[in-house]
Amino acid sequence: MIMVMLVTTFLMVPIMLLVWRSHWSLVILFTALSLVVEIPYFSAVVRKIDQGGWVPLVSAGAFLIIMYVWHYGTLKRYEFEMHSKVSMAWILGLGPSLGLVRVPGMGLVYTELASGVPHIFSHFITNLPAIHSTLVFVCVKYLPVYTVPPDERFLVKRIGPKNFHMFRCVARYGYKDIHKKDDDFEQMLFNSLMLFVRLESMMEEYTDSDEYSTRELNQAGNANPRINGINAGSNMDLSYTSHDSIIQVQSPNHTGNSQVMLSGQTYQTVGDEIAFLNACREAGVVHILGNTIIRARRDSGLLKKIAINYLYAFLRKICRENSVIFNVPHESLLNVGQVFYV
Image 1: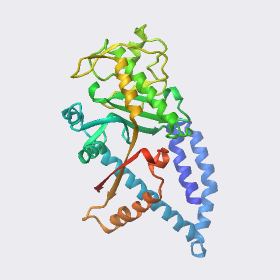
Image 2 (image 1 turned 30 degrees about the vertical axis):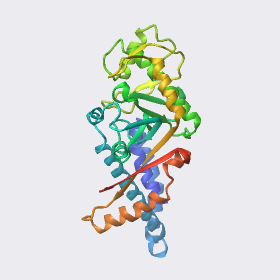
Image 3 (image 1 turned 90 degrees about the horizontal axis):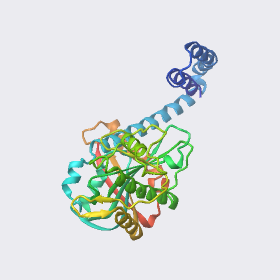
Image 4 (image 1 turned 90 degrees about the vertical axis):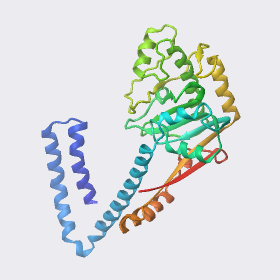
């Protein structure tokens, strides 16, 4: 307990200086008053180690080891996904069919990456001969804010040419928001896709690129009187910056029937693409979750093998699965597993 108090006191110093920007005199006063109470308490505990004071120290050490192993394993999993994500050149080389049979339906691929195509996608299409007609890479991120307004929750962009029918959706939540993967979430995500298609067609008269930045959309939206009731901007700073531009999507307020050019196809209206997305959703929505398992290499040390192959594997086993966190119905759940060595 006293160790927790000491660590909390020392961690409060950079928070007061960097986050709260408190005056240095107030920081010194807070630290001094806290240490006046905690140091005598810590000294009393140290003197009685042989009389039972070792119990809280051993407990603290055990929890420290567990937290370190969990952090190490989670970090290695994320680094693997970051370094092994699929390049856009590889996606474009597959063609509109992605080299496979595109079956009716909509696939929601959950990933921790806010940019790029996750490695689970290439692993999936390498082992299965078919993929859904529409793919949406869903990334759920919790931001260090109290709450995220519903009209600022989704960031949407298109991956590849239009006839690939691939999208990315970043769902942002605050630490007080409760995320449930239910029909409301699916409906909000689907509405965001619809609005993105309409908004994208309106922006094509300003740029020939398939990707649009938030700043360009803000400038074009303010200059274009045709965009009524749609605010493409956001009052919140975007935390995800990369070559993949992300568009802020809010509640749709109007419909459009502008002409768009599908890559490799003839001219088609926005209504046709929206009808295609509706048909894919009615054909069925499948939730694809990745299950990355890490193992220690054969030449790793004994401690690393015990930590990764046994302790971290046990913590992963008793931890809640993503399907439970997202409340995904089992009848539409597809788990894709892969093993890599650290």
